[in-house]
Image 1: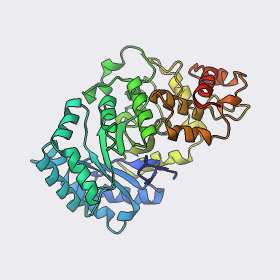
Image 2: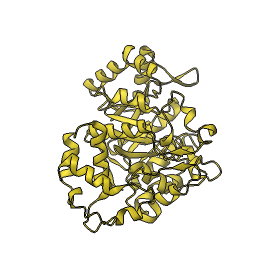
Image 3: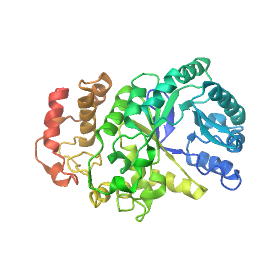
Image 4: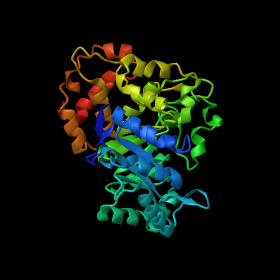
Length: 382
């Protein structure tokens, strides 16, 4: 298992994390089985958005004696009321729900306290005005949560939250179909059939800007819906009209700026193993570029996907990294010091490009790579 730093939190998290969708299987017995297997696989990060008290109690029991082996990302504002899940912005209910959650999890702290499910600007404003953001800050001061997060499907709302400087971790839906969709306050729009009726071209600029903002500001992205609820793995259900593999979906998410871990939902031990098998997959098995180029209604023409099909470069330039740092700088309008530092430590820089064009002949998406290299020299000075 490989590990990445979660933004600027200092936490080193497994590239493959664990979602909680399958924890309730087999009358909650699946929870312990999945945690046992996660430990064997080197998975040390999991998300807990579900508010079912029995599920939370099962997680607490599964963590007994090994709490320090896992980083918990659990959700504030997700509560259980009248026998069912409820998302609330009522501060008193949020506080009561948090105390119950901590008791059921049998822990003194959360590694990431995630403000739950905010897709509308009005809702974000209520999180601020109702004192929920202040409450999260207070919990952090008390050491009861170590880092503050937010979960969202809307890039505009997420950017507004990230700009505050308070949000350290963003849980966001990342996959090659959702990334084409414009911001919406209705999450159902992301997988509505009508959203894919006409040809879609290139990544939504707001989603791209969000990923780049998180990278620049040191906000770690934890990925949800990497497989689109499983639809992307099924040719008949996939909005792209082509089935992808789990490794292709995971690799796509992990190559986006800012991403630290993919939270793979699993309803069985075997499903968790299948996601973790990404770490042993070959470059060919991970490669999503050819599949993307074959999508009948989707085009990434001219858009760098960081897939590295352009390489090897005769001058040994890591073209994907140069392009990623260039895009980060252009998105900010300035060159953030962290981006400049990352560019500086590359072994080879854009100025070494000899304009042979071999890279462009191999690019599945028709990116004008030589122009990007010239622009990188203008931006970074070499």
